Length: 396
Ligand code: C2E
Ligand code: CA
Ligand code: CA
Image (cartoon, rainbow, N blue to C red):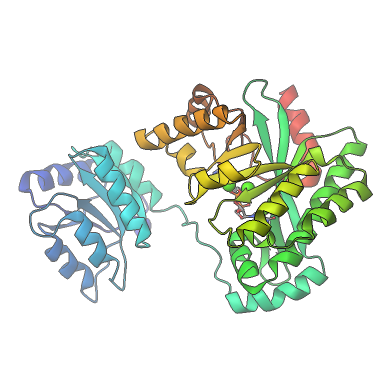
């Protein structure tokens, strides 16, 4: 193992025996140099020393004075924050809770281990330390907003498309249009770097208009080739106050000769339906004009049930938080199953997003999901590669 990239570890556990077991496991996983702490306070003292070079803390949950969850709160205040691995002999839900708490406090969590610690489980998680963290690029929000106006005028935005596959026939049924910004200085920016700023600065309207037009044009281009996946477009809830929008987008579709039934509008249930009357008017009229309405990131908002009741949604997209974790997390699995049944009962098409592994796929198939989207099928790709991708997968 390359010495320069081996993370420095702190093993925190009140039990002498548990620390001994941990030490042995760490040694056989190749980690010799391990600091130990018998309490949360000792660990914090070590971590706040100016010359401390600890990268990862193995954090026991149940400790008599300061427990692992309280330790997390203090660790979040450290100037040099370690990554965490939670270790416990208790129930799995506790480990999950600890992990979610730490992430909510912006700490990096490599994973959880149910006691006893083994060399195998450790090496697996510690390797994650070397993976680059998925952080949004550090671009100044103000600068982004200023650039955006020009970017819209210069059409610097483009769409990548991610396939949606039917579970029953394994057929390509649709693609989701996902915006990227070809920024002259920062390169290709993901939506996470600018959608928020666009929403807060009021630029989202012009941006969405451009995105919707691009997606409709792409749909028209594909249909010339006889290629006709449904095309999904993300609509920010901030757009749902513009009463003219349904007529404009329907007019655009007509102009391009596209049947509105080809277009799915994904609406994030961000609880943002401030002007309920206008929003309902807009959504109902979009439906009336033939667009399919899809409720996006289902399960993460707070007024989802109410929206399901009031809005004519035909598609339900289960958030990836309930898909990704379903294999290991019983609760995520129960929510997934329950959501599929709910969708069934409401005669909606149920789509799962964020399927990353064969295991995810199997669970989704067993749960009765209609369509699957995720890295397991394909990552979002440029428009001109979608058709070839589809040919390759059906031939191969
Ligand atoms: P979303 O609507 O939930 O879109 C799916 C996001 O999940 C995409 O990220 C996609 O690349 C990612 N993804 C797909 N499969 C997987 C998977 O298996 N694992 C993981 N970890 N991720 C997966 P992307 O393109 O970065 O978009 C992020 C979000 O930005 C979107 O989430 C959507 O809320 C927003 N967004 C994207 N395009 C637009 C747009 O045109 N307009 C608006 N208003 N929002 C957009
Ligand atoms: Ca979406
Ligand atoms: Ca989503």
